[in-house]
Amino acid sequence: MIGLGTWEAEINTIFFKGTGRAKISDIGGNYDFKFEILGMNMPAVNVYDVCEEGNTLTATAECDLFKGKKIPVTVTFDGDTVTGIIKAPMLGKLKINGKKIA
Image 1 (cartoon, rainbow, N blue to C red):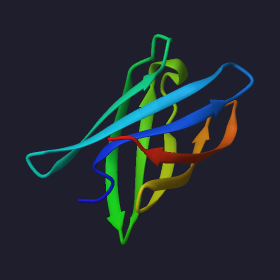
Image 2: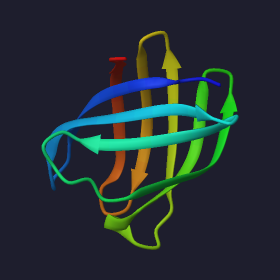
Image 3: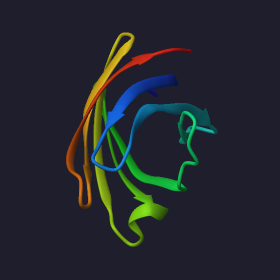
């Protein structure tokens, strides 16, 4: 499994700005994701169809903020850094540039 640990990235959208964290864990051979935005209530997020290829994870997410919309996610891990793209409804392509904090 790749990308295990806690990752942090700055979020800058027209709706909010802040620091986001993602904790990626291995639970019985399956990926488990926990998300938070520091100082804010985070809407529920469900991640599924997770695929690994090399050091890249692709997945589909659904978020209470965008009910019924599928959100494609691609992230690539390189040591203690992560980069990627989230294609969010109404927001377009959001670039991820983050670092491992734990």
